[in-house]
Length: 318
Image (tube, one colour):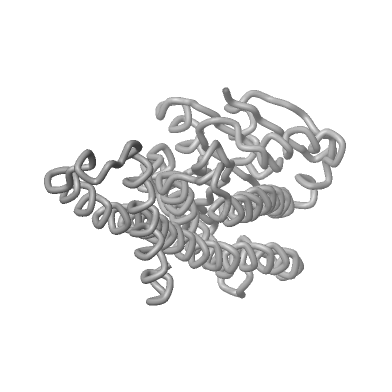
């Protein structure tokens, strides 16, 4: 789906066709935003060619394998960012390719990231986001995109807390796979958030013609929040590694406890086996007029078991 917004010389927000919007931006008579969602390469290429976008950029925009970055092409910037959502025990990342210039904002992505959908929803109510310049609309998109990470951080914090509690609960022991999958999901997010933080930091500096000075403080605020998210992911990584080590240690400790109990049972049972075997082969109960030999055997076994237990307790093995 392709959605286009345009504000012409009259300052009225319109929804033209992508070709009309691209032509108006190329002539310098309008400010536009064109959003490509799940579109094939040739559909975007027609519009990008009209705006005189470099062939290398046109190629990179339709390939969903880019890391977060910003490339300066003089009159426009090529920006790659990632929106994120959490699905079960792993993150779902959506690459958003962005072109920013004084007259246009072009976005290309798969799926329906919340940040872009929020921009489409709010633009009819706040047309000044585009009227004041596409960079203001870009700030709104980046601000909403970073805000989308905050519920993920809350969810991960809650998951880590539950895993810590479950580790010491006999009935709800988490598997090592669940801890490992969470750790892998956090690592995948760190690989994106780290470069994305550096990309936003670059936008706050006096390096790019497309970023005016008055918008940089607002971008710096977005960067600060993303830096806090990056710090949280670093702490989550350490906490996840500690959880995995603690899970392994507790599993080994429980196994040792089971082996200890079985060893105690075997240690108590071994003297009983020797005594009953010897008496069973060498003692004639009838000769000594024992009418209830099982009482004698039970008494001997109880004495031997109690003596063995006392010796183990005295040696502090129990």
